[in-house]
Image (tube, rainbow, N blue to C red; front, top):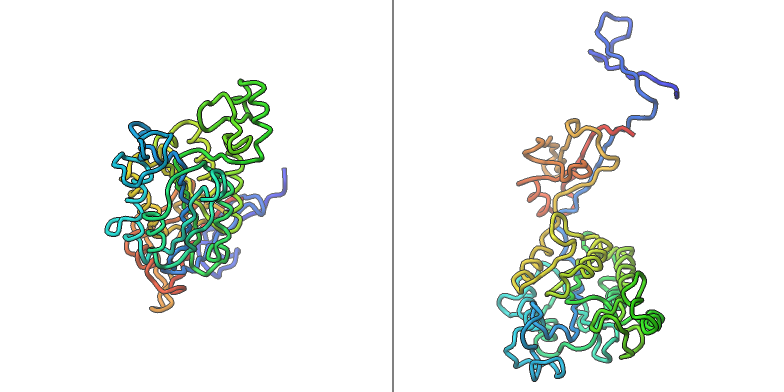
Length: 389
């Protein structure tokens, strides 16, 4: 057993051990106690975040959200192109309404709250070509609205992974600015594919149909699911799960977080849950206490609701490291540099633990509102506690 030391708690201050005072002695392991003193300079009201909208315009967007009924194509079938005049319900038209309606669309209701750019995929140059930025991030949403309403049409495959890496090329996503967050908002109605690196998986699939669905196999994202076509190239139909998660990881390493939204029936299955949840976790914004860790929109109203939820202002939470050993021994105070005051906050009224693991504290009520709307660096949050190492 290692050496032990003693911690002495004196009943009075400034008295010697020889005086007639009550003392209490506790044996502890040396270096086993750390005093936590988390100090957070609050940046105040954040600058509008920079958000690249990475939008799936693959041909499956001509289907309805339920995957039933006629498509919004010339003939209502998958053998004809998209028809903007079609009255058949489809995901592409739902998306246009949710984002671009001049009165109620997300781009209108969120104006001033964020700066948006648009990166649709696949590119117009080919069915499996990764997307290209058609509207760089900026203040005016009208160019994005114009692209969605008047220029873009659905068609092609789902080169999601390569497209995500294109997002980082936008100048306003590539640079870090004080008090301004950077995001990619991925909206897709299907699983990622279109990776030429998966050609070898196609050869295995054609040699043995059972290999298609085996672990590490092609796992075609489109029917027939036990074979592998050659259009537009070998491997195009294979599931591109690992590359997507890696791409989102790479963005996160550059300080760019990702929100993942699945839209319609095809993103609600078991494979989609695994793939898109993996991307959501890698992007730093997995949903908690929800059926899926990504945002699964089954209706256009779901899509509207999730878009508004994602754009909510930052929560008043502050991380603690190391974690407190006893939640009852935590003190939280706020220093106001303008009023020259330090206010001790009351647990359960002014603040609470954001998680059961005591890893974060969250300010409540007017304290949260004041911090969110204050000028930068006006407030400092101080959290004092004891942690056993």
